[in-house]
Image (cartoon, rainbow, N blue to C red; front, top):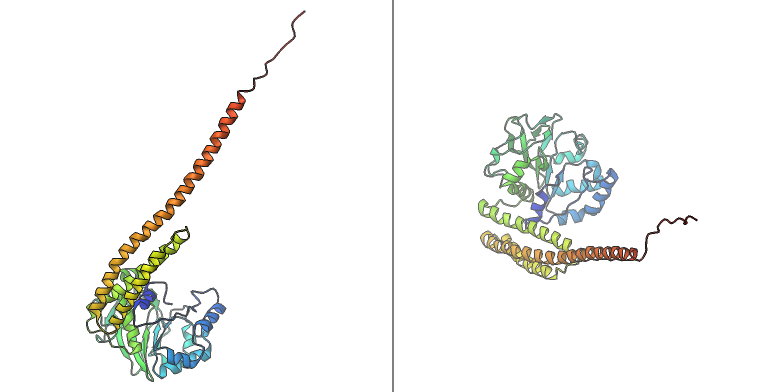
Length: 359
């Protein structure tokens, strides 16, 4: 289960990736039958579509029964022929992945590590990494100094020919194992991305690279040589992605109140064109030039947001005016009614008590 943390947004912001998300994890849908239906809707419907259309796949903590067995066989064949595969949180923890069901089907041959059916909490020496391969996906600055796991899982045992990328600091068992299955690169992580502590998600600056490097590995892409430069540029890519989403959310909100954000849409369209140019430059390896363009776009977002706030204030002004007019009209009507009632009362006299004169 990849969770609803920023990881998928980070992947969407990286120009090298075009992500197709298949939300068939039973933990995130209504029923098991819904999971099966979503799998049929979102996954490729032909083996050729899978093999020709994708360079890698990420399986995130789900049971094998939510994918039609034929489709699962396609994935196994695709990995053997060169498609990469990341198995995130494919370990024993008694949860949604029903790991024992994976262990009795042929797809288990794709796993780079054996799964042990024990369970230990992160506090039992399974919170910090000790990197074993500094040239692999976990060769990142400071990663050994931050806790990377707050969940509870069983151990992994690296299979013959696999590479242990990192071990747990206290437990000394594999935390990440990589290998190949046929021509395809495989990676198995003894935790979920959603098990990373919140303090690490918000405080460890190279966490996006932690995600990206796993995808680079399974896709057979070389890691960037100048990590710091690429890291800064990626930060701008993520910031643009997030600020655009936030801006469009505000635009959608003010449109509901009758505002006309046509100029904002036009401005964003122009910015998207420049953003597209920046991503092309990024893909060509000109990270510094791409970063300069992205920095300018982020500065321009400040102006867009100011213009949007003016549009919002104008829309709200009419709402406030209508409310004020309604309240004022209601008050005036009540005042006139009360005044009319008081005037009418003066036209009548109270009836006095009379009695006949004595004779």
